[in-house]
Image 1 (cartoon, rainbow, N blue to C red):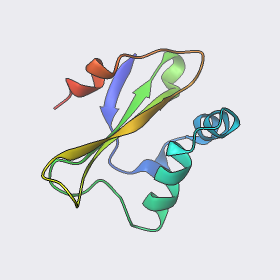
Image 2 (image 1 turned 180 degrees about the vertical axis):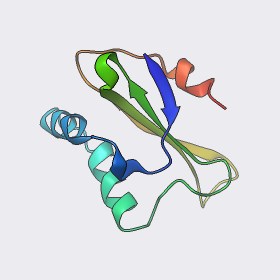
Image 3 (image 1 turned 120 degrees about the vertical axis):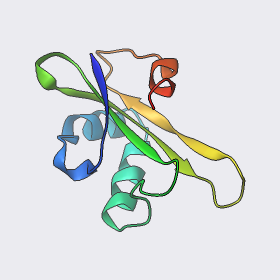
Image 4 (image 1 turned 30 degrees about the horizontal axis):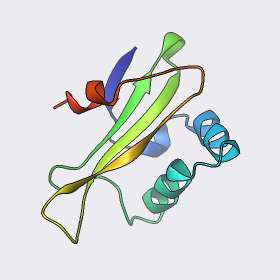
Length: 97
């Protein structure tokens, strides 16, 4: 497994993650994609990050994001989305610079 910073979300194959998360009733990724496409949140401000987790055969198995909170001095850690067939520790995402 490897975790990388995503610099452009739409160049990564997120379709399977998106479908599975919607079927499970989770809409974090749906919102993330919509806000990314309309420019509302593209993770380009100071301290913001978007990560992708890749498993075997270079398959995207998870996404997590960190964005600024306009109402607080603290950043928002956005929920992660991970394919059901995989598990990941949030602590491992937080150790990325």
